[in-house]
Image 1 (cartoon, rainbow, N blue to C red):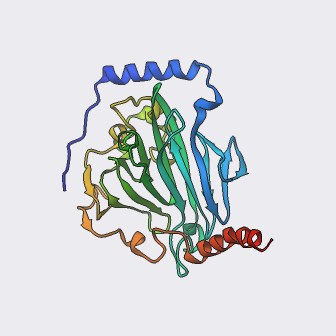
Image 2 (image 1 turned 45 degrees about the vertical axis):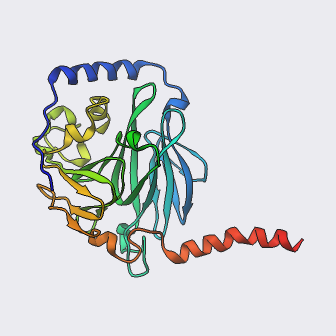
Amino acid sequence: MVYRSKKTVPLARLALAAAVAVVFLVAEVSFADMIVGRASRSWGDVKVERDGSDIPFTDGMDLKKGDIIKTGRSSGAVFELLDPYGNPITEEELFGLPGPKGCADAEGERATGLIHIKMKPITPDKERIVIQVKKGTVKSKTTPGKEAESKMVEILLKEALLKKKGTDLAASYDLGSGQTSLSTLSGLVEFDNIVYSSLPDAYFTDPFNKCEDTLNLDFVLNLTSETVGVFDLLGAGNSVDVAGGYYSIAASPPSAPLPGKAPIHDAEGGLSPEPATMVLLAVGACLPLFRRKRR
């Protein structure tokens, strides 16, 4: 377990980052610059909220920065995050929390998942990507050979955030208990809590009500650079390194890493789609093959 003191970001660097962000915002942005990922597959009821409207999550569709992915009960989505050249960096899986019948079967809204994808170009060949988890579980797997690029992918949950270090992980926010959990499946993850009241007023749309709902993530993301991430700007300075095969629960500071998986991930269906659903998908995929053989 390693605790670190909060990193200070020089004001000159922040000012330069803000200036660069302003230049980027006024520049013309092509559709290709907006693409942050690609849909791989899904099961159940999955939608993408884009520009205020819901559209179906379909295999192979481009995902744009600012997209919100929503999964229903007994549902899930798998997608890839891409580098500026369209190559996969990580594979992400989104689904709700497990209940009596397995994955995404908890009571009420706990069975659903919702994430917001944000992205900022840093250099012509690098970009910083933030996955904001509003509810449910995100399971993240680094593409082999893309360990360096995956370090630019950060995951923000309601009361905590984490920084990948070329690794595989699962992170959940439980609406019912308000608990944030991290399980590192391999590699290493840096995990920290957030103290909203300690953050600058400029980070919020309402500085008199500092919380997740008023956090202006677009503004914060525009302050980032190749070396300064959202983790550095929002973290409370209580970070703990969680190695593969260990888990931690968000607190102030996060709990000391413990062996195994977090309870929510160790439950049946906590880290994989509902088995019955996947069996049906597999059978459906095989039917066309059987039909072709009979001809």
